[in-house]
Length: 361
Figure 1: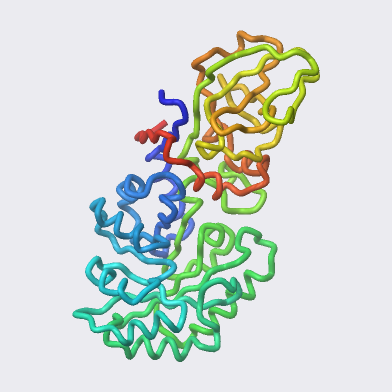
Figure 2: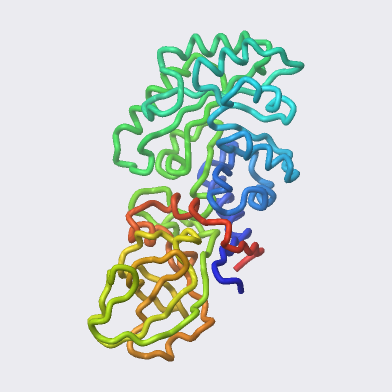
């Protein structure tokens, strides 16, 4: 095994997509592949999602990489295009675009194209990030319908700000506003991200767009993947490269951040923030070695972490696999120990980590 390795389980990926379909059986699925498929590998993941109806990315470069990789399914640019020269590229590659501001609308109206582009009109119902103001929907909608370079069907979409919390009344307010705005517009609707797919079935609409849940990670507040019948797709692991004694009172790592309260042994694992393991992981963050949980101690270094394995040095040997997160050790727990979110951990995997793709684990 290479040292830092991300093992990607294709069977788990497809099972999670099936779970999405079981939760939203009447909706088409737009699988979200932005940020290198949430750190899992853009093209390899897309190639395994034959049952998805479309793919979504954030940037046109990601969409082009999918086409270069042989992906022919519809691809939606969730942030739309950033300059007018992208429009010809979108048409040539059969990309679909979100429109969320006046610049994009005007660029489409002023284009000189040999065909028409599929458009998703995004309305800001409360996220206050991207999207047209609710008061502008009728104007934007009519101008898009009148534009000769926009396909006749204009899909309508919005984005929830708090869908991970099913107790937050803001979700219902956004849903009601969107439903009011689109009531007289007979177009396909798309509202639900991963959290809304689980927490708000009434928001499923014609399309759902799963991201995090498709990779087997919980998008719901204070919930682990197993509770949602999701299977982690990635296992991040490395190897023990040293086992060494530490005496009571001796400091470990940069700044002497941790001192042994008794004589013990440490396992040194070849992974660190240079691989994407979170530098701010706290003392006590679990690491799994030989099916046993051991606490991380000392500061995370660029290339190494140290793990307290206790008084028995024979419990762990050089060459043993150490699991940072995966099916047996929830990434949601590691994220909490690092005061971050699972999204960031997945997206922070660095290029020096080796990827291993398997059919099942």
